[in-house]
Image (cartoon, rainbow, N blue to C red):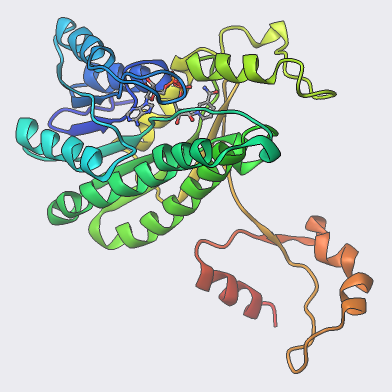
Length: 315
Ligand code: NAI
C-alpha cells in the first residue's frame, strides 16, 4: 500500500509535549507534516505551565529533519485557542488538521468533586475542543479541506467511577464531534473521535488516585497485554483519521490493548407505542423487555433527524 503522507499539510496537535499527543506529533512530522506542537507544560492536573515540554518535542522533530513550531498556550482559554491557530497560520500559512488531545485529570468521587476541579476539567477537554474547532473552522472551510480528531475516552463513553468531570467532558466531546461532523460535511471538514488507552502520566495519576478507593473494581492489567499499553499504539488510528486517506466522518473509534474498533451509539428497534395518545406507565412496564431487546435489531442513527426517519421506516 502507498505510504500515507502529510507532505504539504499543517497540523496542530494539542497536549503534544508528552504522552499520546507527543507520539501523534512525531509520527505526523515523520510523514512530512508541519506540526504545531502545543503543550501548556503544567502538571497532570493542569496547574502551572512552561514552554519546555512543547519546545522539547518540537526540537526532537527538527533534530529528526522535520518541521515543527512550539506553542505553550492553554487550550482552556479563548485567547489560548485563538493564539494556537494564529501561530499555525503565521508560521506555516494555513491549518489542515487539528488533533484535540490536550487533557488534565482531577479525580474524586462525584460527592467530593469541587466546582474548581469540575470547571477546570470541562474547560480543558470539552470547551477547549470546541474553542479550537471554532478557531480552525474558517481556515478549513475557506480551503474546503480539514480533518479534526477529537480525543474522547471509554471513561466517558462507557463510564468509570471517580472521573465525573472527565467522563462528562469526554462524552461531551463525542457529542461535539457529531455536530462538527455534520456541519463540516459541506466544507470538506471530516471529524472523528478517538478513544485511546495507554499508560501515560495521566493514567499513572488515575491509578494512584484510585488505589484503595475502588473496592471490587479490578484495575490491574494482565501480563499478557504485551506492550499494547504504550502510548504509540494509539497513534496509527489517530494519524489515519487525520490523513487525506481518511474519507469517513462522524465516527468514534477505540484503540484498546491493540484492538481497534468502531464504537457506535445505537437504539434498539424497541417497542412502538401508540401515536394518537401517550402510552401509560404500565404500557412501558409491560413492554420493558421489547424496549431493551437488541437481539431483534437496532439502529445506529447518524444524526437526530435520521432517528426519526429510521423509526418511521418501520411502519
Ligand atoms: P498526558 O498527561 O501525558 O498528556 C496530556 C497533555 O496535555 C500533557 O502533556 C499536558 O501538559 C497537556 N495539557 C494539559 N492541559 C493543557 C492545556 N490547558 N493546554 C495545552 N496542553 C495541556 O496524558 P495522555 O494519556 O497522553 O492523554 C492524552 C489524551 O488522551 C487526553 O485527552 C486524555 O484524556 C486522553 N485519554 C487518555 C487515556 C489513557 O489511557 N492514557 C484514555 C482515554 C483518553
